[in-house]
Image 1: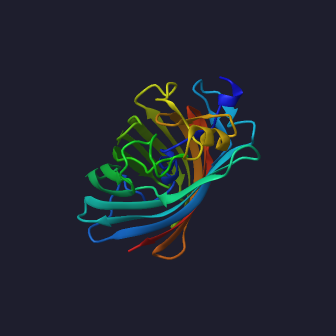
Image 2 (image 1 turned 30 degrees about the horizontal axis):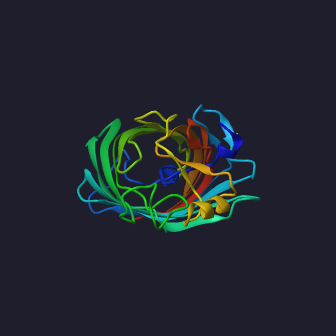
Image 3 (image 1 turned 90 degrees about the horizontal axis):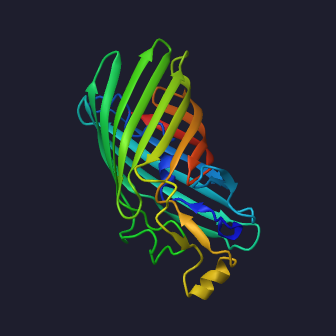
Length: 304
């Protein structure tokens, strides 16, 4: 691929990476008891100046030292409707910006990413716990199409409808805990559906504290080395105006499909009987047609 067309990869599915770092999302193997719940407020930032190309090779976004920064904060909530059925809600808000040292203008967008409503049903109790979770993710806008959104002509778009359904399994052995999840994420509009998976191992020797390591990833249901189509990520206006804004280099690929595997590590600390502080760092280790993101996140949870 010619260097002037080897552009950075913008990611409408970036929030999937970010939201997997909130500890109290729906999809835990154990649900909240009836009448009990939790609220989790989180924030953090992920950056990428490189990407894994369609051949899986790691490259810089371009020769202008372009960097994408995704700052995300939000709230998640869980409430036990019965001892085995839990209501899950999440509202993430993101500020995404692309900055280059030369040639390109700064581009940014600030918006709620989606409104998520779902439920988790615990189907197995005992030495091994298991649940089935499902969440509808409603975009903040209703334009159909991520490539021709008139309100967001530069990148991202107003989002798209998603439905994520997953099976979650966990077990505790003395001071060690193990958790795993695999799900199918239906995505409307141009992005292809994907398989989402994660595995976690943690250690807690002191009540109310713990450390953990997390492996997570996404596998597209299509060929990630064949993105749907390229598009110009300049400003709105005529073709000439977009070329000028684009620095004359042109082509940017929207990620409508990708494969990646990432690694995370973190810890949590119980401040009181109700308050929990947590932190996590994550990095993508490999992938195809995906950003080489790394990020850090902090959160504060309240159990009631």
